[in-house]
Amino acid sequence: MSFSFLSNQVISGRRYVGIMSAEQVGETMGLVFDDLHRTWIYPWDYFYELGNNKFGLMRNYIKTLQKHRLSREPPPPRRR
Image (tube, rainbow, N blue to C red; front, side, top):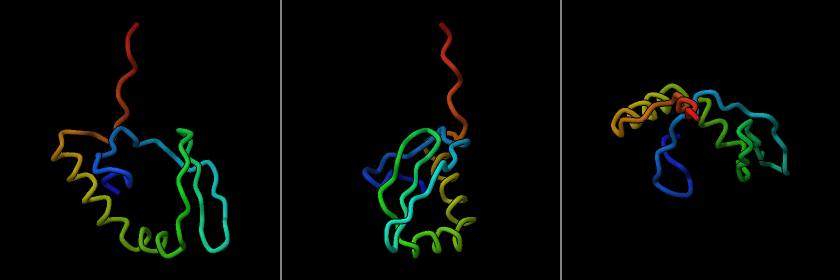
């Protein structure tokens, strides 16, 4: 996805974020990521659509990042 679900903010700097766990809740799934953010519940149809459209979604995401002069790379560590 190019944008946060809660706003039109473009999410950048997250190349290395992975899924730590997935929890089934009835007919849906909740995810916990290794940057410690959690997501709300996703229906299985959503995962199916992501899988079927992963290459097009990624292309659109990268184009959106480029348009906003952003990157998937995490920011460099701050110097002290």
